[in-house]
Length: 139
Image (tube, rainbow, N blue to C red):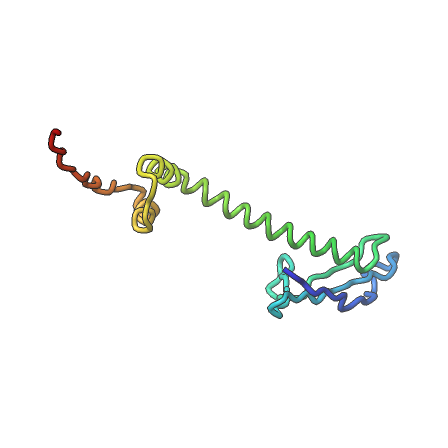
């Protein structure tokens, strides 16, 4: 996927402490090929904003922005991993039943999987009728 990234804004902020120097903040405009713009929500806020933040000591704008994006992507991946792991742990018995049913019957249709997910039980399909071929006449 192609992304267009621009360093949109770098500003000097007045320091909160009298001893500290100015803090530099930056934001990025990141747009994908479909024209969608990436927005993030900082922890503890309800507002969406462009990714960015303050530079660490010795960082230039591009390095700081790359670090901020890496941190945001890591947070998204960590959250998705936690959700997936919770789902697997919570539904382990159902996953086991699906696996055992697949080993025995080789395929399950959507209704069978839905039954397992909804009830935690599996009703095996009726046996497939075997074709009985006539015996050939002795020659």
